Amino acid sequence: AASAQRPEEVIQRYMEVVAGVQDEDCIICMDQLSNASGYETQSTEEGPSVLPDTVGKFIKCGHTLHMLCMLAMYNNGTKDGSLQCPSCKTIYGEKTGTQPKGKMEIYSIGQSLPGHPDCGTIQIIYSIPPGLQGPEHPNPGQPYSCRGFPRFCFLPDNDKGRKVLELLKVAWMRRLIFTVGTSSTTGEPDTVVWNNIHHKTEMMSNLSGHGYPDPNYLDNVLSELASQGVTEDCFKA
Ligand code: NAD
Image 1 (spheres, rainbow, N blue to C red):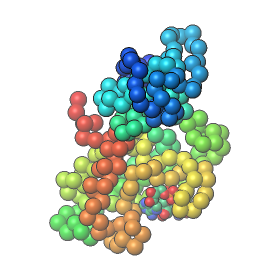
Image 2 (cartoon, helix red, strand yellow; image 1 turned 180 degrees about the horizontal axis):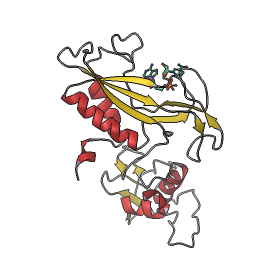
Image 3 (cartoon, rainbow, N blue to C red; image 1 turned 90 degrees about the vertical axis):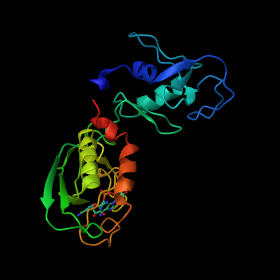
Image 4 (tube, rainbow, N blue to C red; image 1 turned 180 degrees about the vertical axis):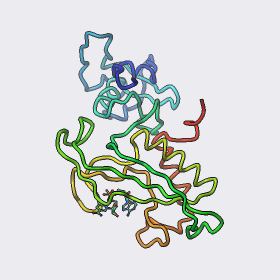
């Protein structure tokens, strides 16, 4: 599994070493790239480590920063084998999240959504039972609560809505739809909350702002999915 890889190897897969001093700042430590990273090199028995003065360049977006700063950022996260450029947010590899175990079910409803009179409706039901937090959560070993589950969500059953549904299935598999944290609605900590991919939980009105009609919704959620690395590219072989 990607998560079993050494962090140094993950960094070196997606960044190449740049020779010559850059007249730029490192976006992580804000010091000049010509100065060494403030992070300490971890000595490892398994292989070469990253040195503090090594400057790395991301292979796709080309942004440069101290490799050791990027390694520290990676080690601070979920260590899932993926990297995200801190400048432009380009994702390398497959970003995964910390969504707890649960169930995603899909149903079809004949009724139309406001704003989408020409088609029926897709209903998604998310069920997540309470459990204990893992090492990837804010308070490992402590319980997490699950408020308002099952949560019911709605998409128009047209081409774009079905495309969003397929991408949401990918996001669910990658554990990106929910996370464990503090609810901004209730202030409750250690609870399962939405994680930056908006869902429509109100079918026939939009009193909450999380309902229909909302002509921009499908485009907005597509760009939220893309910023988590979930795009149509996921369906290419
Ligand atoms: P949150 O309050 O931490 O917010 C995270 C994101 O979810 C935000 O981007 C917000 O815009 C979005 N969001 C907020 N309310 C939403 C809603 N009704 N439908 C769809 N998206 C919504 O996230 P959370 O704690 O998961 O709470 C979101 C909603 O879940 C609450 O508004 C409420 O409807 C429901 N909830 C119910 C209970 C309950 O006891 N029944 C408890 C907590 C939350």
